[in-house]
Amino acid sequence: MPTARSLGLVSLPDLPVRREGIETACVYTRVAESFNRVGNFEAFSPPESAYFLGGGQQGPDYEGLRISGEWTVKRVLKLKTVDLDAGDAWGNEMRFEVARQNARMVAAWQAY
Image (cartoon, rainbow, N blue to C red):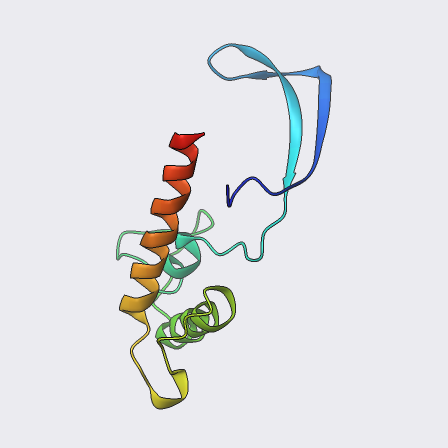
């Protein structure tokens, strides 16, 4: 499964953690090509009611959003259908590719 790449697992049997009940703590270290998340993009174009880092409102940064999106399309997703030099729109292609990858990942989890 795409998310199952692990670097290490450290058990901490003397450290209790409260979830549904009391469990033993552990640290699971994952390795990934990128740690981009939806929130990375939301931070550049927040909804009007969003507050980041517990304080004042942050305005949109569309140039930062463009740079981050183009980097993700080119370096992380490696989409061949988008020609960034020619100015192709990358937003829809990125959204569809992320949806495809998430669908494959969830299907793998369910099959497992």
